[in-house]
Image: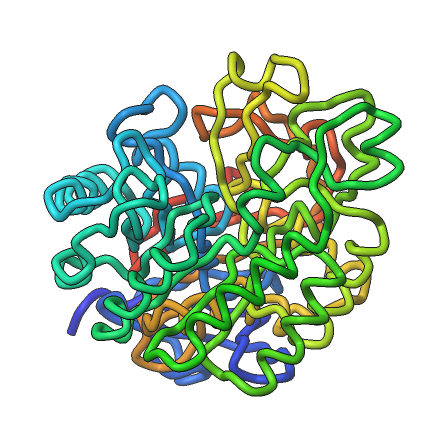
Length: 427
């Protein structure tokens, strides 16, 4: 008999069921056992707090090997643990790119050595993520890449992309696309419209996303490919996605919490922490995205954690690097959807945990018996003020700095081992 822990007085947030329940849950030797099956081993009193599966975050950038000053495995995993994220699906757009089996093996080994949370690496579709020459997809797939992507880059040459997809279809793998038309969005930093014109910002039209979605999904229509659009952010893109998903069950789509909560007006006086990729959209787009979340059209919410140092953000808006960190804010920020009555907590954790786990085909994201005990305990109502200087992440480029949010992570556990505990929570 392995190590046993029983959680009592827990409010269960299980995304596989519709309704919340309360009671006890026992874990044994790193796995979840039955609920309400008596008290065994060490007892942890949840005192009515929420117990949920840990967040599975698709699209996290860990900046090893070449930019450790922005984010290392150690700092990213500490940030994730504090934020209630137990699994990172990492991007390959590092320096150098994860575009060959040797670098993938190095990346995996560093993750095992330095990370407290689970690391599921993706690999590059093209060498150096430049959209020109295909990587060794077969070897990278065999080496443990859970998906293939060029990160924020869209492959401009449709013929090259189609040839890559045809080859990748032999492995029934997952392709993660950044559905934006390359030429319409190149060297732009805002969404086309009155606001961008007033601010004098280079901009791209919202239909660049529509074109990207239509092209990518047309190319996979007759191939053995699972396709995930990493961030769908516009009403026009959502309208296209709705029709496509009705006929092709191998298409999934996500969005970032930043696009759900902010719009283009938040750029304000050229605030570079709000410069994202894709850029923030109109209030109409944001409202449509909220409805798509409620409808179930969007499959997952991610942080799209993109660390940038101060030097790359303290520049004129057009020159500043895009992206925001999000591992430590994804839980309280996402809980805004619960407090605003957009989603129940069970529905929210389908988007944060169960669905992303299913997208990468990992047995995670629920409180089912026999699953790894990757769980979090959180207080959904606790007021928190975001202070970027208190982050575990090496980079602090968050648009939430100074915001008052609701929801605090109290404890994070991976396979039955506590990797984070808030000082206010007793175990």
